[in-house]
Length: 356
Image 1 (cartoon, rainbow, N blue to C red):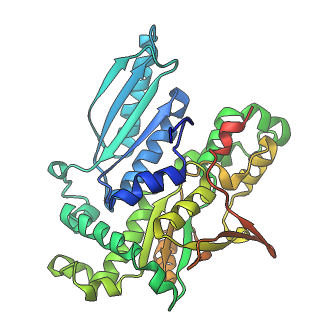
Image 2 (cartoon, one colour):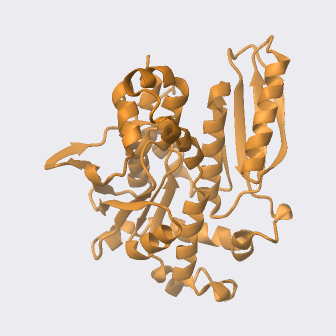
Image 3 (cartoon, rainbow, N blue to C red):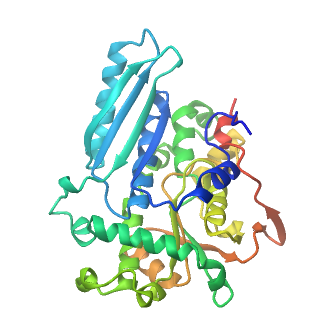
């Protein structure tokens, strides 16, 4: 079968051709911006994905820029300045990259790869000190092992699906950035201050840090963590976190589909329990898009049989978190809307791509 559609490859293809042929432990995260307007969004998603895949703070980013012919050099300088600002805001060192001209593109394409370099370890970073590269790899190995035992655990206990923050954060920022005039026609400018906050909410560093801190405490008291054998089954049995990922393209619906595919199970989620900001509802109504199916950097989805501890720690940090549903042993992907069951359909692309 040939792959023809542009953009994100369908979940079914990723599962059968990639994930089923390898045990994946992430060491970096790459995102691509198609056009200058997408750079900040792609950067945020690359940083978020790196936090989740590394189980620790990333410290480097490489930048690859592909330009169409006759591209304005002043615009290239603006891109470089923007990339530099974003790196500084995220405490990342720019580590090389490339800049090429291609007659195969009609707009600038910028690719970010965010990763961790042990040589740059910041001794003042408590999180990095307490989870060195080896420990971080052990944590990821444990999570990989936990995924494989989900179905047997569902028989004996409830495994809850939680999400931090709100659905549609990134998409709301994008709509305000690109369709401000249309939003103003309906709402005026009374919500401008609220909308301007959304872009600053796209970073999930604090979310992931807190979740990993709880994961560490499930394994061993913090001060003794380096003395523990992470591969000991007694340690594995103490762990109640089965999955963690950041939301992105396709929103919470696509995030839930990814969770189900990764864990080889189904879910039942209550739509009313998915947290959403009123500003998101307003913008989506104006633009006629589904807020649950649009890009959602700024939120993390995770599955655990011990939600209370995670909720307590996250709320102590001022991070909103909600239980939105449970895993199920069958493969049905169900969203409950009042008493009606809806089944999540295969990913067909982020709804923001359909705005005309």
